Image (cartoon, rainbow, N blue to C red; front, side, top):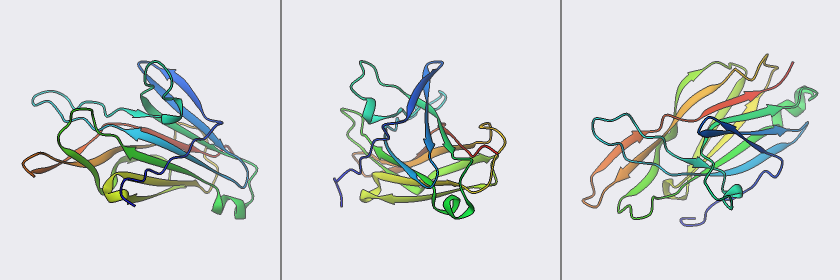
Length: 185
């Protein structure tokens, strides 16, 4: 499957300014699922400086004059779903690595593609798969019970390896995004 990017757009999502970045939000309606693609551009750190933000964008909105860097992903699940519906409702987030122009090395997702830094929501489940020779990460997000507020979140960093021209491989982690799956009570 190498080279065949998985691509899907959630036409009901919103993008809201949040400082110099954006919050991407969507709703998973009763008994359904949402599928959305993103592009992630890993950036090598500069020695002696804090880690750079890895731009995450919604390619469905790439026709805008400037990219919308996403730092928060909010997924709201229906509060009216039955127990059986909750088991099958999900958000599927597809993240494709996009190489920086002129970058001579190669980036690939490694170590399951994400590093969970802190989980505040114990009623949600996140499953991750890596495909396309490490270039695509697919996250499956469920919320089984009601959660009180959207403040319950999963902070994680993307984990990717960079292979430079000499063949040396180093692993790096991004500092964003925050994913907030919520099901109102």
